[in-house]
Length: 299
Image (tube, rainbow, N blue to C red; front, side, top):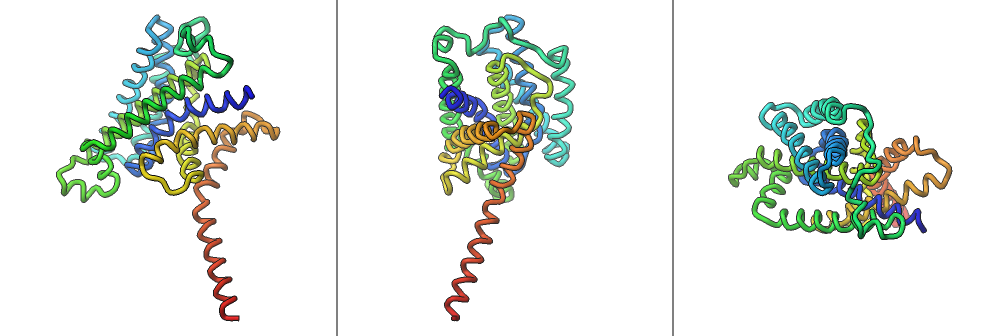
């Protein structure tokens, strides 16, 4: 039972990454590699701020702001510098590695004995692992509600239009460059926010904790979409959270089968590849079914 509760809690905390990446990957229609730098950036910022006596909530919000700043740099490189988005993201991600070392002063910083969001009186009184479930649920309800509301505003509709058809959006007077920059800022802010939460839950920040993060975030999005089928945009945002929880259960099953923790990145990549190829498998099966029906009809 404790493993199930832990998986749900971890899925809720990591779902922040899925929602953050959803804004760029699904709405703006490009994969932003900056996230692999902003996740540990948010963790490093929050951990060091907490270590110097800052309130954990303010430290987590500070992580969001720092992540948004990294997204702004990527956005400017992409829109004003005309650097391809993939390369712009890699450049900022690479720079974040050195910035994270500067912030922490070393590769790993512990929160042992420090106050965190998980150590307040209410959460500390809960049974083991329930603190991450309660906090994760609260955070995801707030974030999902805010994002859904934002996408229904005039600014949000302009953001969606930019991802759907840039030419049409420009003809409607929408500044598509500003929309892309805004999307990258909010996305990376959420990713850094998620990094701050995960670091506080784990009790440390590590300069290498961003490796493979984009695969984990993509898995939340893809698994949610595959598991729940055709959904509206608002429903897909909710499905990201559920997909993140399902992904954690898949990892739990994999570990129970005897695989090592070191294999998780490889397994995550395989799971994601299979999920993304499911439409291809479905089309092949449908084609074979149609051919078979045609042959049976001729007979």
